[in-house]
Image (cartoon, rainbow, N blue to C red):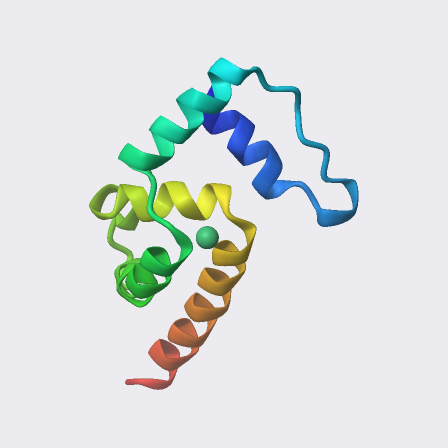
Length: 98
Ligand SMILES: [Zn+2]
């Protein structure tokens, strides 16, 4: 299983039925390396989230411009919820403006 898929599985599963798939020590080490080199933490994502959402509201390719944020949103349910809420607000604002 690819690390990204593994993370997705954990991040996306509803809390009640969250089952951590089996993972070997080597995978854990790989995971840590992956996170160190590729991953933003929630705080960094949170800081970048309004910019990310603004790009999306403008219908530009936010995933291409900020791939690390996109990756994190795919894996982290909390940030994903935050992002959805923010996007909602921005879209409403957008519609109100002429
Ligand atoms: Zn997060």
